[in-house]
Image 1: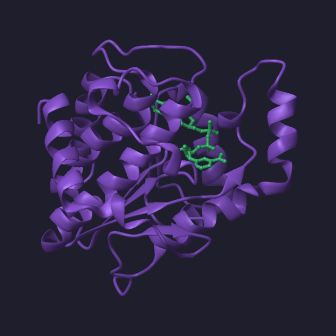
Image 2 (image 1 turned 90 degrees about the horizontal axis):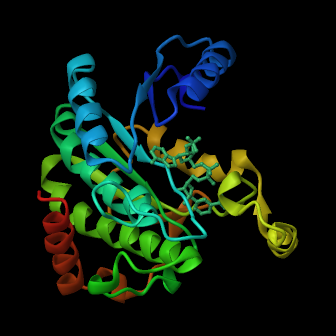
Length: 254
Ligand SMILES: NC(=O)c1ccc[n+]([C@@H]2O[C@H](COP(=O)([O-])OP(=O)(O)OC[C@H]3O[C@@H](n4cnc5c(N)ncnc54)[C@H](OP(=O)(O)O)[C@@H]3O)[C@@H](O)[C@H]2O)c1
């Protein structure tokens, strides 16, 4: 959608070999050659820092950052930096990436940050001392609750700097994230079947926010189906958001 509108796109992917044919397909369909692949593994602080250095060398500014990558894992798994892989991929990695890209977004102002959350976030209540100890769907819900709250915290912080920050709940979509490669996948699929929306529907709110002109100055919201979704006030509690910022920055040595 974005390439078709003539935007320069950078696909930040951990598996660049798998991403290159996708880049070629996007170039072919859109007729836009300004689609690039750059390596980024959100599970590695080092990879994130190298990506940002390379990005800043190649591109003078950034208009829109879409934090899209996300995973669910069935079993405990840790990154080389000692974080749970779900919390790192879905929350800490994108948080570090976002912070490091703020100067590029400022140069590209009005900059826009779009964070992917999920309708599961209300089940993501967490304790900071257990942040690496949650499992499976609970770890995923915690990560998406953190993403939503960080969206609100950053929106307040970055408003003065010409950068908007919003979350998107894309709805329930039949993608690989839904499946565990276990026998109960069929059951999960059956339960979710009535709720599935198409890939295009899931992507349209992201494309709408990313592609809108400077007149769209909404910030600190969660979008769903092209509109603003109501979020319980406790997720915007100033003390909770301050605490989240301090603890996240401490974990990432920022
Ligand atoms: N599907 C849904 O129903 C649903 C609902 C609510 C929210 N969401 C959110 O929507 C976003 C996209 O999910 P999806 O449904 O499209 O799932 P998906 O098809 O599994 O795509 C997830 C993407 O994240 C990438 N990724 C995973 N770990 C990474 C890492 N360490 N570094 C860089 N990239 C990494 C994957 O790369 P590889 O190709 O290398 O694996 C994959 O391209 C996620 O944030 C998800 O939580 C999805």
